[in-house]
Image (cartoon, rainbow, N blue to C red):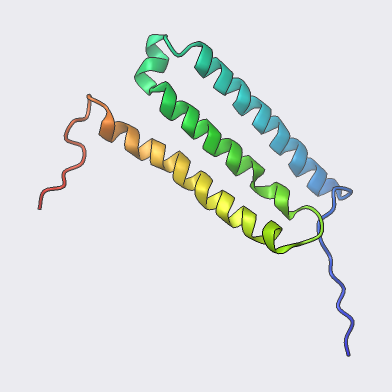
Length: 116
């Protein structure tokens, strides 16, 4: 019978620590951007970009930055499945907002045609 050694990522690893620090910095910058978008939501530039979709994209980006965190520590069923769901959800939120915004704006009324 062979002995199986299970190795997993720990926070003691310098590479893991670097990725966590970079992720935390990016999350802080994204939250700062969310605050700026919320405060300046009445300016013409933010109004033309739709503050709601900007906020939704930023939430999707924060979710993408958090995707690495469940890999740290002892692997469980939840920690193996969560990054897949988080990655797919963040991708769907961000790119859904990117592709949906031009279709709903009044400047591009015929950007999608459903006729055959």
